[in-house]
Length: 282
Image (cartoon, rainbow, N blue to C red; front, side):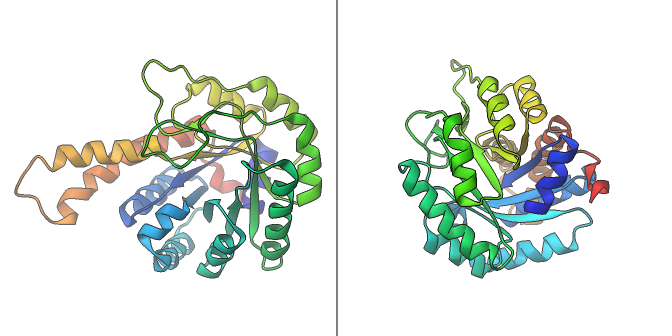
């Protein structure tokens, strides 16, 4: 992640981190990246990892190595040092330690410990300041409400922990926004934070925000954007449609159309984040 996002920051684009919980979603994300000639991050949340199993990580790594574009395998929202170290042993090349709901000093202590352990084996570390909201029961765990990052704490946190990337809470939430809710990113906060630190910044919960806001966030220093709900919703909407045919039972008959539907969303994200064609920079 450290190397991947250094190029993104220098060239003002963001790399999508697609949350993956099946081989079909993995196939779709990597195929979309290859078609877009773009770098990609395969993110696996601990809940997703518990579902697919540690052996899935080895499969993902093999697919990443075979891909003709840069691919990072990233642990999303690791909740403890034990969980993060288990992910490193499983083969993740990048990990997140999320102690953002703890007081600042506890968050710093947890991140510092993970950084010392992970960087010793050349694994990148992402931390988080502020808290991301949670919109529905299918979304990754989040806070009941967004707690915006305090710019005054950012430099202290980065200097004290040595994290490679920083997720900042600036108004996004995990999951899909209800039709009557208008999401809004605090671009003023992002602009201030980007002037304080030089490491790549991360946006979680990037599925439902207006495209214009996301594009501005990339211009203002966001280098990694997590996408889960948009992509998975497209996949499973198509899956429900395909399964209306009661005869179909083979995965090879059911899933190709679902993967294609997912890839439409992925390709739109690559274009929106200015990632399309950027594999040539690596």
